[in-house]
Image 1 (cartoon, rainbow, N blue to C red):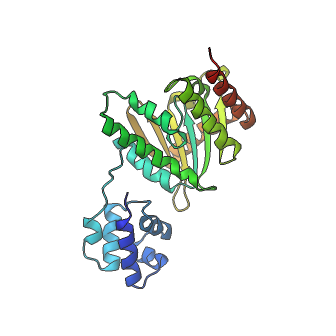
Image 2: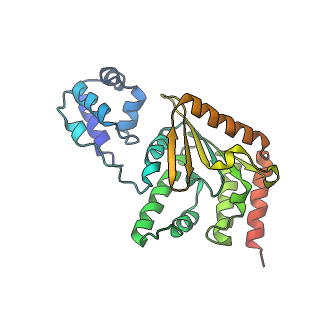
Image 3: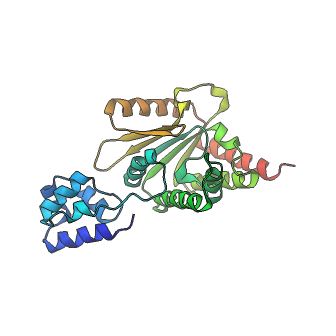
Length: 264
């Protein structure tokens, strides 16, 4: 989202002579939450905006001019996208294709080119841009900490053709070898595991309890119930324990990419 809203909030806070900590106390929020809003990383809920208006004596300005969530993402993913931008640690499991934050542009475009019902070129471009924006969370050399657990089928599904797939695999190899992310492959030989039921993203935060996001065919859900989140974390941990070590996983990706590029 644009950051005009966050900048205006910051200017009103400073005009009132308040620190982020003091405003957080007055609005019954955390300082980190205020910082995220001012930096444009988070859109406050209507209730948060009302409390900010009261704390800053700004009438209903912050409530009335909440930014629109105009990013091109599926409606069911929008809440997870906001959490993803705030997370200090993300652990992804992918049963079918490479997680969004790890995709190359060519791979992303190939994914959205096969949508049903078909999208117009302009609409497809909007989705591609939004997904590539998500990958920018890796531009920070440290946070968020990212682990990716990929089912072996992800390596062999030819999304976009051999060259696109080889480029995508080498992008993962580069991220893994640079130590920016941890990579593990869940090999075919293990058979069925509970985690294979769908895509899963586990997220941890500085100022709120862990959350999880699961996704199936055209449906996704954010989970914040501690019991459910703990269960999903357990599934991930069990699968990770059976996965290939990182060095072997990277070697398998490199070898698969090489085979794709040298296939007769």
